[in-house]
Image (cartoon, rainbow, N blue to C red):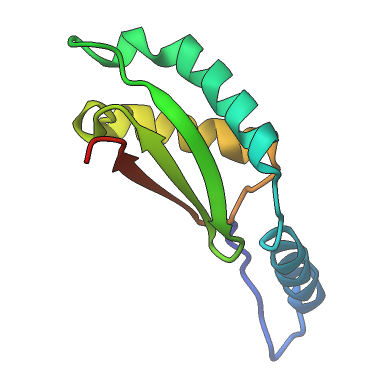
Length: 115
């Protein structure tokens, strides 16, 4: 999250703060197609899957974006418990880099395909 120091009495960096807030607001409403999300997430899982699990590798079956503010994804996976915090952090980092989401909260919700 960006930090900007301002001074209202001396009018320092107030415009910079306003510009940044408008930029964050516009980027926070980013919608990404389901096919693009699935393609990228499967590639990233291929890069990191085995290194994050001692058991059977975590598998993502498919993913969909359910809201834009905050950026919220539901990922349907083989076993929710295989998606440890380090793998979740890795996926959030990749999402932030790929879709220019610096300063935007990302919510990942994992659901098992098991009934």
